[in-house]
Length: 364
Ligand SMILES: [Zn+2]
Ligand SMILES: [Zn+2]
Image 1: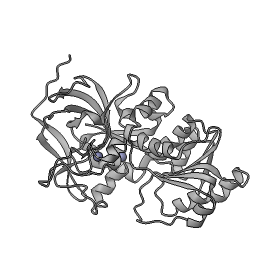
Image 2: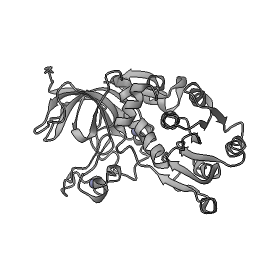
Image 3: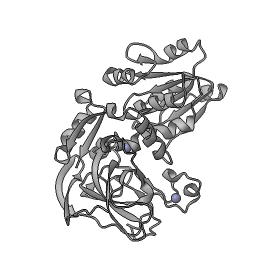
Image 4: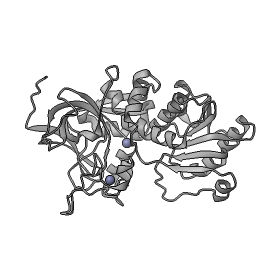
């Protein structure tokens, strides 16, 4: 067994107020029963991270306190085991999930642990600790040299997958959960709206599941990236009407499935309008405009199925396999890497899509 020298303190990037980040020296956390200590190697910045920094989640408990360590799309190495851990060993390379359900409620028992009925019940408020965790959102995250995780959040990384790519397990999994919920018609036509990191993963996943043709709706460098990664048709929504174009491409019938990954307020409407009768629409994005319009009569008359998709339950093993086989070309999605000290710069490049950035990864 490898022996790791674990220090008493570590560097961590902390959020100390909205729009205020600070590099701090904090204690290295100790793993409790069923938990392990991980040396964090890579953390990918998620679309939700800049929003949390700006205070866009003030309506939730994210962040729950200051200073708070964010970061939830991560990969690293296990360096110490807590009491009773026998499913992992020191030295294992692992990728993390943000959600750990309570394991006891009806939803968790059915496998739907990202919609755990005991969300947030961690005992912090003097209430019951039901064991729920949401790392990097209301529980300490990965923007640090070390963090402690329950082993149910962890998955072994295949040998040929790097830490930087494995850090996208969460992101690719969010895409894959939606893609699985909508289903993919083998030999059919899928549309992916919004070629950000999640949409680019969804596009490659639709192909892996047997779609004959994947149409991507977007613009700029990200649409070019979709083309480079194998999109069959790219529609620039600034130059043409995506609904009309999809109908043209499908002889007026519409797409079998539409994966809505853009989060634009008018995209769910468009997604429904470009789906075929009995088609499926997956809402994978988050809508910061709040409630958005759905064409109820189209849904009704065309017997559309709209599925909501929350995070990435039970898909990590599959997406790690996709990274390993190259079905998802992870190394083409990681465009930038930075040390922890440059986190603010990294967020700026990611958030403002500077320098052709797709996925920006921090190496603490
Ligand atoms: Zn994320
Ligand atoms: Zn639960």
